[in-house]
Length: 229
Image 1 (cartoon, rainbow, N blue to C red):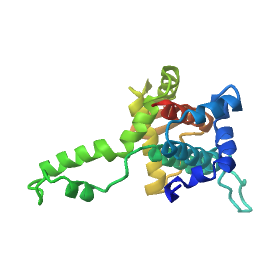
Image 2: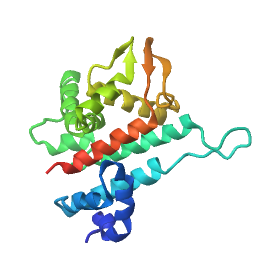
Image 3: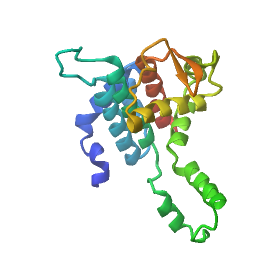
Image 4: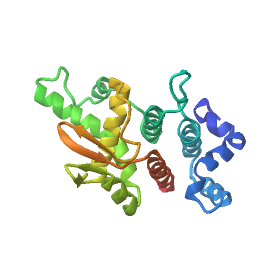
């Protein structure tokens, strides 16, 4: 096997942990093992092992700990900040498309004339690129695989001006925004600690999200992804 299938090369070691991470989605470990064996290709089996292991160690069984005398070792909004980054890292990795930057994408299309003549054309091309490689698109597609009841529960857990978010896509965008504000602006994630009121873009925001709920939704979406042919 190639280096690209390095997780599958150690399947006997990694599989029990991967299945344990997702055990809540199956009636038994035997059923989970049967699910894994039905995954069609080695590439997707490798992807399953990598994603499940990452989730198990970084999110489900992992906490960010603080070694400081003036606070608790685990603070929920600190550890949740890292966990949501880990969850979205796995979600973004669930794609059969190799990542390509915008410039490389432009160069490979002979029908696109360089230099780009104007800003409007550049914006249009960038929109086409994001439809293929956009992170938010991948994340929205992931959450759209969830059962309808779970989608409704998640949507109702985020209210803007006392109204639940309009679609599961908007919910995915909200979560991705929360993740990005931590990654790019060092704003810790407060929105996953239960019932809280906030302001976002000067609009009153009420969230009832918790990390256990997000983990359950992630596990359901992960299994749904690998249920596809």
